[in-house]
Amino acid sequence: MGGLGRLALVAALAVAAAAPVLSQSRPARWHLTPDGYGPVRIGMTRAQVERALAVRLRGTPLEEGPDACIQMSAVRGFPGLSFMFEARRLTRISAIQYIEGCA
Image (tube, rainbow, N blue to C red; front, side):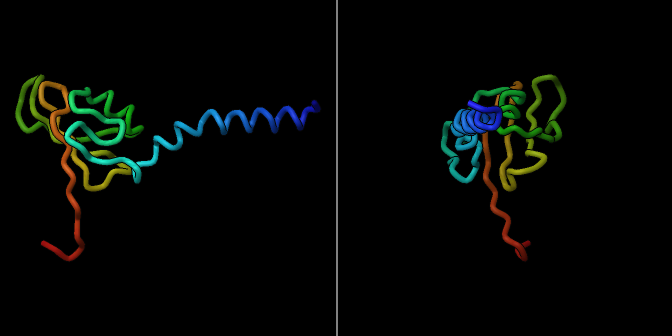
């Protein structure tokens, strides 16, 4: 097999290996359930949720203390979803649909 043939084989194998990851990373196929959203599960830490979504979360604690309740949202890619953490664990995922023109 020549150099170009090897390169094509390596590229095909890389695409085939990435297929499960690519199909899992499609938020349009994920559903919000009592257990979580897509790969995100209730009980996960913030770091685990950020890894599962491949995005950083931002938010402000609703009270003081290391185990404070904090409402967070993704910095990009997940509009209308918020994630609540209590004692550093995900306890709730909320979906809010924004309708333009409504106050």
